[in-house]
Image (tube, rainbow, N blue to C red; front, side, top):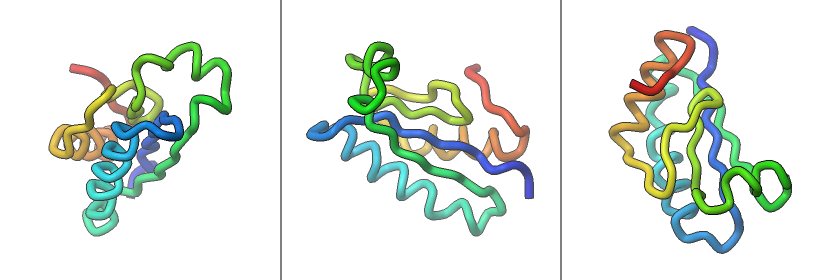
Amino acid sequence: MSKPVELTLLSKPGCHLCDDAREVIEGVCAGFGERGVAVLFEERNILEDPELARLHAEDIPVVLVDGRRHAIWRVDATKLSAAIEKAGKHGRWRIG
């Protein structure tokens, strides 16, 4: 198995789009263990980190795959799954 893929959701309390994103992420991540790709999921509240709040206050939710921005506002399960698969195979993910 390759290096685990780090998946981060930047969110804040009371954000309904964040709730939707979390639901999509949890659904996508559920199937990856069986496929031999380890996914480490972390959710970070931007209100607890002034720098994250400054950078992402208008964009949440933000989904990062291996530290790189994958999506803002809405998360597409098919695109997220493909990004995780690619990151798991190549050890790093990039746009394009």
